Image 1 (cartoon, rainbow, N blue to C red):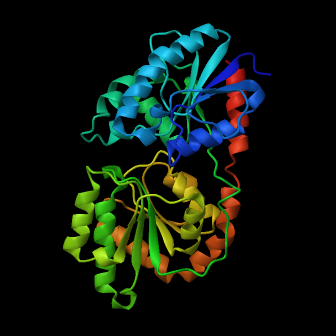
Image 2 (cartoon, rainbow, N blue to C red; image 1 turned 180 degrees about the horizontal axis):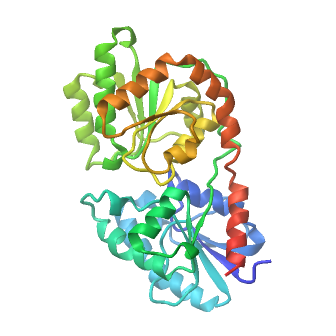
Image 3 (cartoon, rainbow, N blue to C red; image 1 turned 90 degrees about the vertical axis):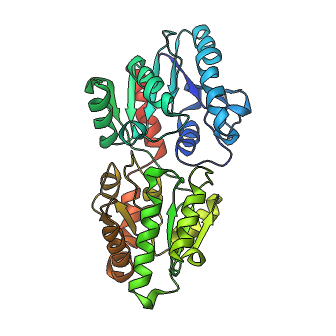
Length: 360
């Protein structure tokens, strides 16, 4: 039995969830509600729910990050001081600093330290996150690759780090046995490490040298980003593939289910991933994944799928071509993908977190 009550930091909840916000909401639904008080802008019918301001959510843009950090330091800090027998669980590396509170935080990756690029959030990643991790009672990592990053880059003891497996929405993501349509799928934010320009160039080369697949399309699902999306679309135009690229800025869970089941393959050519949730979701649907050989993606795929070098356009192109040509591999993964994905379960993740907290 957990001695301390868990105070769950749900400030990153989003009404259009992706990535960290998906993990935040799914774990909140899976942790035993009798052990937890949820602080969040809204609730998925959890008991012991305490409402916090809606504008802390990433739905409210860049300024929501500043508001959330202020709330973390002061409002959340004061709340935890009053609940002195409790421990904070945060599904992202955010917690009050210099307040002497007990915390368990989940780290998804240290990408901004590995691949820094100019963004208003760079000081957050370089200064704030390392302090949060050094102050934490335990650090949870979503893969061995992320755990190694935390140890190597921040010099944090292995004794403080625990590796947990994430999960996926089993009620929504499943094989539908759809006839495969003539398109590749990308599910990714429009940020540099997602490597979208190289994917576009590889797609152009694939179509240019293989006239038989001239109708092949690329569907890119990810939120519009005014810093990067215009240049990506401009590249499409210069390559004369804009008529074959569909930019989709958000999809519902049901729309994502249909896309994952009907695409030829999911393409994840990231320069680095701390986990790669879309890869797991694609496997759960029995869909082939063409994935980067960097970070945690080989770990998640477990030798299933096609690995490519994300810095090599020819390698990405070759992976796409193999996905189209190797029908035996695609058929094999229709059967084995869902079996592999079953190893990842939110309820198991939640139980593991409860056990870790009970030992603090």
